Length: 289
Image (cartoon, rainbow, N blue to C red; front, side):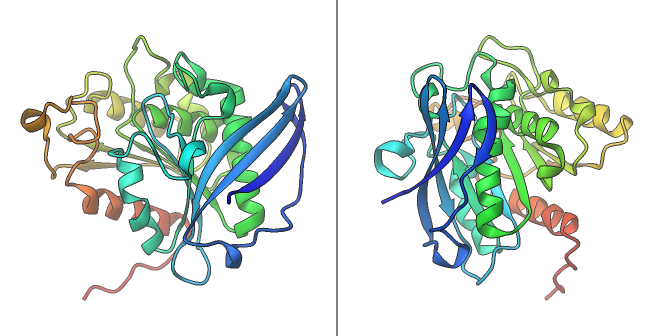
């Protein structure tokens, strides 16, 4: 059974968060479904979140994972992802936990379960950042008593950047993977959320051979440079390995089994990500063997 956590709000303005009495980090199994609910004037909205804890006794930080596409994972159906299973963040969440981090895979809220999900500009909205992501972050902070990071890939990078700008110091940092930077018919790109106003540590990771038409390397580099010129604490990493399977099984260049989705390049990406996380947390590097 999943855990139900409730927030109380009028319209979309959160006024109070119910304390967590039942869940502490030590009581969480390897993965557990949370249902974060928001009581609004027009009814109740529920956001499913798949929580994973690391094997060690205490999580050094919690990473909110925001996949791309329309964001619909169908966690409410079977407490396991029913869609987007080839997404990089879904494939590697267990590796992040082995590195000592807790993970929180966020599904779409119940009022966005039908198409278009998180498309049509919703990812760049205040409601998405403050209600959907912000309230989950608040519950995670109370449960784990640890810093909260947000990681988004592709269209999920729009959600992550939006949360970073609007939530500010409530987050410890944000990582933008395979960032969507080009105008498109299905929704906003990361440049719609005023990147130069992000004031928390930021990491860009991109594949040198990302051929997805809305996530070119040059676009991510330009976004990075914009933040760098604004004085942000921003870092840049480029991945060169892996495999693009689009020519073998028909997977398009914007899907998970491609350079865009860091297919077969997982160790390199996780290495960049965890090294940056450790640096933000001021952890000394592990000695070389």
